Amino acid sequence: MAERNMDMNKCPMPVQDSDVRNKNFDEVALGYTYEMAVNEARRCLNCPKKPCVSACPVQIDIPAFIERVANEDMEGAFEVLSKSTSLPAVCGRVCPQENQCEGKCVRGIKGEAVGIGRLERFVADYHREHCTEKPVMPEQNGHKVAVIGAGPSGLTVAGDLAKMGYKVTIYEALHLAGGVLVYGIPEFRLPKAIVQKEIDNLKAIGVDVETNMVIGKVLTIDELFEMGNEAVFVGSGAGLPRFMNIPGESLKGVFSANEFLTRINLMKAYKEDSKTPIQHAKKVAVVGGGNVAMDAARCAKRLGAEEVYIVYRRGMEELPARKEEVEHAEEEGIIFKTLHNPIEILGDEDGMVSGMKCVQMELGEPDESGRRRPMVKEGSEFVLDVDSVIMSIGTSPNPLIRSTTPGLDANNHGCLITKDEKGETTREGVYAGGDAVTGAATVILAMGAGKSAAKAIDEYIQSK
Image: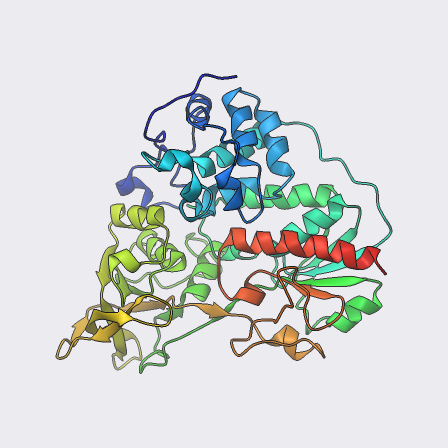
């Protein structure tokens, strides 16, 4: 057994200098070296009760994989990860570990938690760079399942079912598989080559991926059943952007964060030879305070904006974005205008954004969500000098699938209704998970829903 490292602080993650990285789209965090990873892994106490595992949506045996890193058995560590997750290189980069596994870490009581996410990333990257063995094709069981959407939940369902021997076909509406991993999360947080490698691994175990397949238009769910599929999983995400319905939202220079990020990440609009260029504004306001807002603001900065504002109606303490993303944004020069809210977007005679009228806010008593309610401070109106506005206040599921599938019920927010955590919908044989059910949430929660659904689909088909 390796000697424990009782350092109170986790090993810092090497990163690009902030004044360099805010001008490029290369990955910000550079990852641990071999020595850093081993040293950090030795901070883990290998607790017998494993509190970190209870907070992991996909139930990774975290102490087991970290113990193997501590003993310099990197392939053994990867084997442990692979039993629970098909996307370790992704999760290690974008999961909110501070609110999940690391939030339960015993080392975090008197110091900093073990860097679980950083170690997961290291193990996945090490395996990708050093392993030459190809994934083994599982023995087929003769059953077929269709998966709608190649995002985190769909990829997880497909991977788990393929390992059980199912013939799985993923139908993706866009021209590339990956869902939010390729169109939403920027290259500097999650390199697309890593996502593609994870998808290639699924293809190697027999998963078929058909792109440019808009289910509800090209094919219906009924037709998927007629093609011999015994179950269908809906993991179509939540790609319909929300707006505030304030004056001026139809002006040129107003984007949804969904469109803005898709054009940059999927269509590579930041490149000089891009066929789908996007406006390079000088002063940008991003309305919202989540991870998507941070991504949009940091992308705008990289496109050359001189000033980028995060406009959020609550305070810094209430920002829903990950602490690390907020810190990186601050380091890169993003200006936080918290306790502010827009009431109108102003335009010039050419219909272009010329400013945004805002009001200052103050926090009152808690509302039904438990957070203090933001209230307008009287007489606080002012105009923020911007020439572009990006709305990042959430998304909801596209209604196409539910509107073309008899018996598939949704709630008032357009999210598919499931009977329990297994993902069974109101239509027999149809399961759902991820943002299509919860509304916009995290990658790891979508993956957790995918794992539960895969198990339920297997039970359903085997019981027929």
